[in-house]
Length: 385
Image 1 (tube, rainbow, N blue to C red):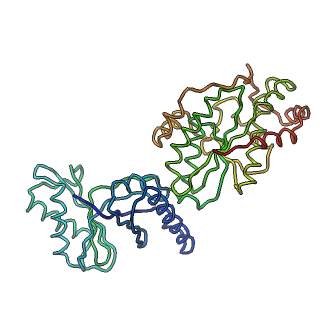
Image 2 (cartoon, helix red, strand yellow):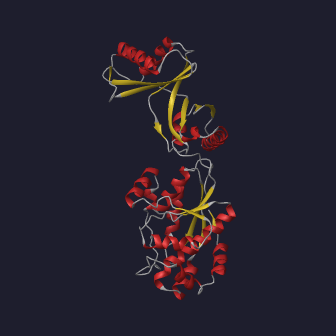
């Protein structure tokens, strides 16, 4: 069956008060519009309370985009009929629709939802349409585990028939919660952390901190590949990668400071760089892929020492996740294969890094470094891809 309209549903946006809901809906429609236009798709969007309808001649291509729009919960290609509260029309149209999907040997169920002031209920629709399908097609009803399901939504004088609900990411429309700087290595964790903040309506400013010669240049290539995958979710807000060179500062740490504090001192500078980039771009927070206890620098003591380096808010959406959970999300969102491309670890990591850093000791070591001068030098290496 050829469809020409898509029903789009959104979840928690509908719980907002009127003014806020309109703002969220407008942002959602704006993101959808930019996403479809970027693929050259012609369309028309109409809205009803809790629903958007997209009319287009390219339904399949549109669905591939809409499946990755934050704020949408499910979508369905639909057939629309004007029934004017006429149950007989509804049943007649419904039976014709069902013939395209249900065969005599199938079991089926009808799921109906009605809003408005029609004289019939959802249960009445299910019984009447189910009886007609049994009579005309010969299929059997199975309400618990059917082979096929026919859905119908009745809203005022129209009935919408569909046979599938395609899952979307849900969350909040991208761009409703402001900008955040993502400390982005291209690894599994940072990509997932960024995706989770996107799901909560934040637009990302990905920042790659180049630690060569202590890491290989192939790491940057990996980060660019992962960002391509992440950009598939950033519909309406295409991201560019910001890079800075950090290697000379690491050399200063290695030459002048205690070996076991290398990672803490290095990461505190990364936080400072991210804070400055955030100020430039109007970001409200920094996002990291840190998970509590996963590596030496991510213990509770060390995270506390890291946070003392800056004044901006640090968000860690993966803080309570284990590695397997993070990998599962990475596979689901499509970044995993790119994140595990060959890359080199950091050769400056000490043999026994400090797991319980003390702020007073770290501050004493930082006196050996010209932090403001080095920060300025790092920021001068900034490039955007």
